[in-house]
Amino acid sequence: MPRVFVYGTLRAGEVNDLNRAATRHGIAAPTLIGTGVLAGRLYDFGTYPGLVPDAAAGPVTGDLYDIPDALLPVLDEIEEVYPGQATLFLRESCIVDCNGAPIECLLYPVADAAVAGLARIDSGDWVAYRKARDGVVA
Image (cartoon, rainbow, N blue to C red):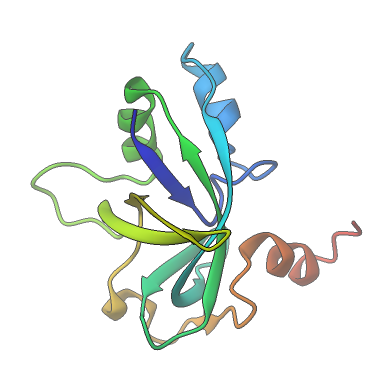
């Protein structure tokens, strides 16, 4: 069962919520492991964020899930990651800190060149940033 770190629209309650994606495709629900952080820079692409891993940067907050194998191609489709094609998002392995424990998981980052000129999300938390930006009352 793969593990994945989601930091943007795949988080619970967001437009591409991992749980809703599984339900739509008749796939068993993913299992939330917990909240994790990864050193990186988060950027605002408008309707979604992009993460550039960067060991010298601050923490980016996201959620760690164990997902059924059948959900991985769904995530690839949502992130438009296709074998042999250059796309905005990549799929790679990373180490995320979850309550002080390093956990290896999959991540969908963007290349550094893709964020030129975009606003940086200094808080490292897409959900909090999006709600504040869009005037959503908690």
